[in-house]
Image (cartoon, rainbow, N blue to C red; front, side, top):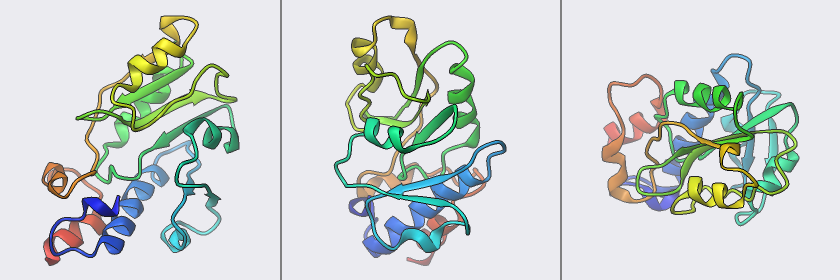
Length: 182
């Protein structure tokens, strides 16, 4: 995520800002208990007191992270989507009424978020960076209707991606502050 810092913005501060804004969006959802799963040390000051923090390896598969989560359903949101509309997370959970796993694809490939029933389906090996995660999961599934897709969004993966941030959307204050300060 730090590689997507625009020119003139400290990459470490950029990483913290977009992770904080993504966390804040999730933490603001009703009926959702946020958990921070991170391979970056020192992000515990970004979350509300009492938030569970899962330390994971940078290359840990999503299926392993899903195994660590509690509850009936869970969503994993890519931390590089600070302006993700909360409605898109709600759509992921709504689709779990008809599928075992749902994916919100990212513009340019990959996934912005995915949700599934817990425990996750044994056949599912999701990858948020797969070029076509919906097709990949459908190929893994024993039946096509086990994987649903919802509307997609964008992620911040390269320096020019900050131009995709929607100034009309609420939230993403930390990221917005960095962009206006440069």
